[in-house]
Amino acid sequence: MSTLTKAAIVDKLYKSLLTTHAEAQDLVEAVLETIKTTLEQGEVVKLPGFGNFGVRNKRARRGRNPKTGEEVEISARSVMVFHPSNILRERVNKARPKSSS
Image (cartoon, rainbow, N blue to C red; front, side, top):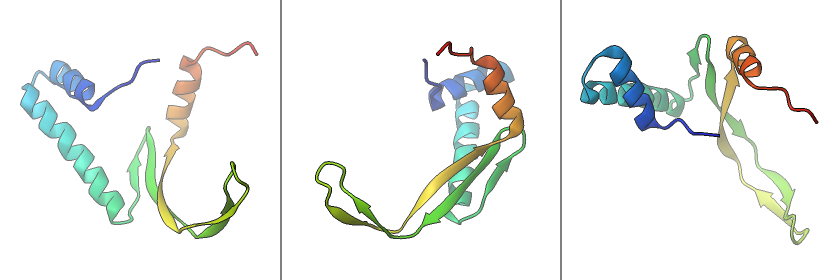
């Protein structure tokens, strides 16, 4: 399995848009910064055909250390959530070969 990095996204934009590498990098940085800022403000980022990014607040709760069995307090925190669109979900499922298990 390979990984798509930010640099690879910049290279793909650079090659497909026939723009300069610096402009492609600035574009990617601007998009990512906009997404980060929006999420920091507690808003949802909706990308039709791709999915929604959001922040969910989790309350404090009691947990258990799996090694020792000791009960511990898990503090309240915010977590990132991503919900893929049905279009993306279908494309990924079609692209993946079925496992024979």
